Each structure stands twice: as C-alpha cells, then as structure tokens.
Image (tube, rainbow, N blue to C red; front, side, top):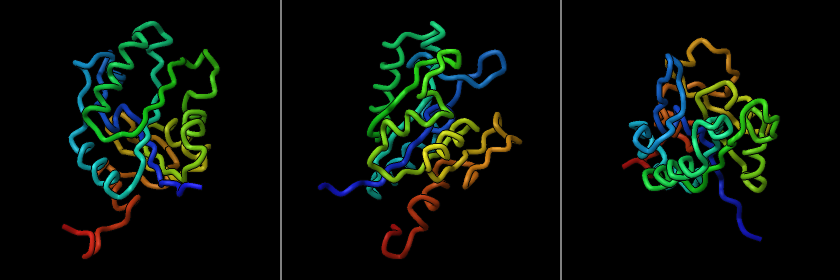
Length: 179
C-alpha cells in the first residue's frame, strides 16, 4: 500500500489565470493568446508543490458544449497551463447546464473522480466552486475578486490572493522553514 499525498484542488479561471471580459462579464479564455497567468500563481503553486501537495485543477468549460470552443482548443490551453505552472492534472467539465451532467460544478463529480484517494482542499473564485468543494467534503477557500464581491459564499476562508492561501494550507512559516 502506498502512502497518500495531500492534494489541493484549484479552479482555473480567476485563480490560476485571469478571466477575459466579454460583454461586461467575466469569462474563460478561449485561445492561448487570451491566456494570462495570474501574477502570484507560479510562486504560490511552487510553494505548495515543494510542501508535497498534488496540484489538481477542476474547471467548468461550457464554451465547448456551446460550440464556442473546440475540444482541441481547450486541450491546447491546458497544455500551455501545464507548461507554465507545476500542476499535476486538469479535469474539465465541457458541458453546459442543460446537459445535466454530474461533473459540472457545483456538483462534485470532477473532484470525486480525481480525488478518490486524497484528502483535499479546494479554493476557487465563484460560489459554485465553494459549493462543489463542500459537496465533496473539502475545506474551501474563496478568492475575493471584483466580479464576485458581495456574494454570500460560505467558504471556510475568504482571501484576496493565491499567495495568502499558503499559510492556511501549509501553515505559517517557522524558523526551520523560512528562507
């Protein structure tokens, strides 16, 4: 029997990469050219990776089901994310609400499918991310963004940056771990 590694689940858009604004609404990037990594994502994920965490991304990508983005374009975006950040795996729900699947957040199918063997934390930037994590039995962290302020997400923690989550997940630095 192998020892289980702790894992952290992360939403993609608004957490790891910046959202794209379309018609005044926060949306997912559809092309590699639109993909912009959040400024603190690399440092935060590198710290979590060094602490021994699996970094697992769960993301709703309904533009595939809506015909606004191809499967290949989504896979290409994820390949670029793998190149830019030390993530271990990405699971994407490519359905829209009308598809009534079990993987679209806030349903926990993505998390349960990837995390059957891991104790996990989840942090995201939308109510549905937090609800998904709670449904899967995870501790949750909401990243407070301009487009989600004032929402009543019942997250375990609400923070402003990905970097701030390190002390919540790993614990504060000690003299032995501080550099």
